[in-house]
Image 1 (cartoon, rainbow, N blue to C red):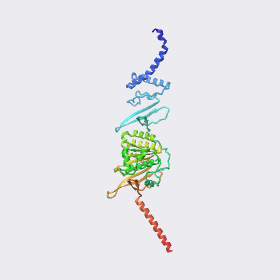
Image 2: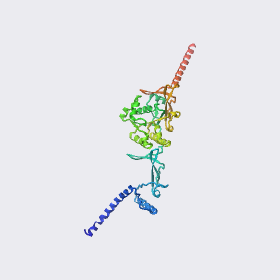
Image 3: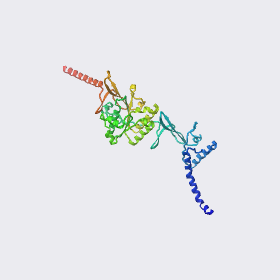
Image 4: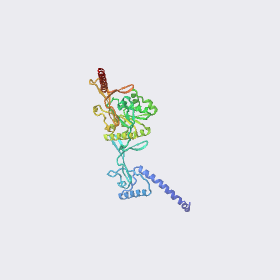
Length: 401
């Protein structure tokens, strides 16, 4: 082949070579970065290095290219290796992975973002099979609308203590007490009643498997099986330690989005205590409560109270102020210590008239039965007898006349 033939294809060879070069360049850079070598590893002079970084960023802006650079944080106070990128970049995002008490938590923080308002706090995030999810560490706010609608507790005799109306729809309910008092039973009765109304109910069980919970509740006449079969009741049984606080909260978000429940039962809330310090646990529970309230979900929590701290019936989590209705159940021994009786009373119920006296209740094959207060019933009978005596005296006086 002569020289003329070679030059004849020059106008085709040059564009083709340029295309190959442009394709190969990012591939080469990707291989270099993947091998651990930084982009400017061959430049040792700091002045030249800073100049080349400026030129690269300026060129990207002139081409109107949205570029993302990743790098390791410097050992000094700088957020970047060379200390220059943070000044010429429009946005800096800092990622961190911390391990505390054998629990790893990933966090993200926006250091700066030119021309845009942004949150400056650290936010936990998780990486799962659906990608990356960031959950704001701050609560959703106090803009939930009020409601005067009521829903049954699932226990007719307990409804009477709320003047026959039950819980407020979309509110939060807390049942606290020591072990064996019947907290889970109250939550189960509420869950089944929600399903009877045709509403989906999500039941988080942190201490019993779905099979155990179904079997145990059937002993007091609360049958989960038909509602699970109809798809109205979903039991999620897991240990909080299996996921960690943030992953657990993300799991709650996803289940609420997919199942779309109108009622949620969390049993017990106190199981989350050991998964972080007090501030982390309170923050997580606050965000979870805000999630339920923002969706108009009626939520029933149970909280286990240690037998050595019965004077504090709210449990070991300081969220009682976030609860709309607070019911306490307890086990009381007689003076001889031979007989134990279950009792229930309402501590508070916002926006609802209620009977705050102590009432006994029993767990039977027919469910939960709250019995009338004996002292109140005796007082009512005495009052009726007194009225009858006055009526009799008035009749005698009239006859004598």
